[in-house]
Length: 203
Length: 282
Image (cartoon, rainbow over all chains, first blue to last red; front, top):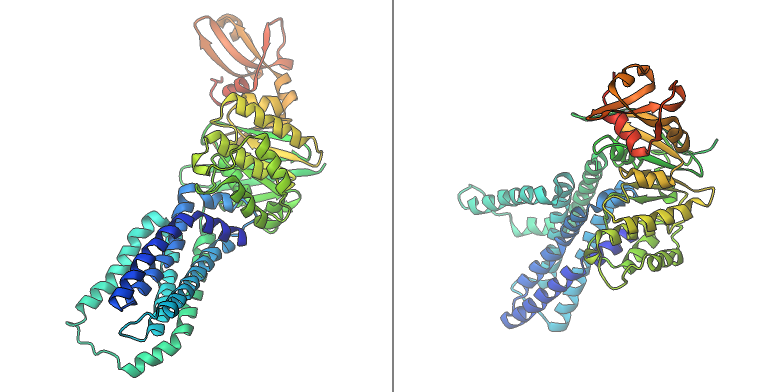
């Protein structure tokens, strides 16, 4: 597991530098605009996509069939991508928290709530994407991913026309408290689904 | 006898191809060459040994252990080289060592470094900038740096120039000096196998054609060149395969069974393989 994580981190070093540069750019932006919601969302999303990038690199090098010839079980290989995603997610949240404290970042909404919500959404996206990528590969998986994202987008755009009342503030808050458990459950489901998909795969 | 690798009644069904009842045994301390044309089933067999694909039937024992129930224990003790390098392109040799240290419990960094020096692999280039030969050497260095007892090599020398191939064959010869070590290698470069192997297995269209000690195999066959009338008089059972040409017939024959006064040239592995796979037969 540790070996796989080290491999991914070394492999993603260049991407990390690019993301770092983007973040510094948006950091100035958010200080000037006195709104850091955008910085937070974009940084969490970019980091969440990194395990997918690492899967694309693996696919390119046909790493999987080699890795599975080494003493690495299929389960461990799958888990390593989740661990990578969770570590990057938590790492980003930590960096964002430090930036927030040091720069006294502001936002219209409570800033800590935005950071946590962004982290949660990041993990949800990861849980959704990884089984798709393990099933279809990154190349085809990207197309499936676009389809998966288009459906909620259409629903949101349609929402004014759908007869649908916004949830009350109270129920949103209740949902927020429950969210860590919901996210953990979805992650767990996603991991077991990915392991199942990957165990059946032939290389 | 102790076996490094034993395959019994192995079957794998695809839509258009089927690996059918493959049996082979590699005694400990020996090198077995696995030959056959492209698509004959060499890589499929190796993938089945490594559980990269799932078998339909049969048993595989590696170093005396079942390849499924003891998969991880086996993989700790075997070295693998596949037909192309699979290292992610952004890695340097030092990174490969850093990663493998956490994957193989017996990883030996000093041995790895010594192979890197022996193969003169550049320290500050990434795998991306490596030539095909350098990538294969890196894979071989990894396969030899965790005190493996069995090497499984799938077309490891294909696509390499003769000098690099020679260098790699020397490394294999060093490895096999230890009687505990064995090598199973597939290749269609038969001259390489002729140099180093103890056993030869020929696979054709998913079936094993023969599995024999190399010296015995080379001794038993010969190349007969004669005229058509002379050829017609020979017992067909002795002829493994033949080709007619402008001057007469060239045939692969079983030397010991051929009675009479004929000039027979020694057959090499390539000819034996060709006549088994493609030569006409009566």
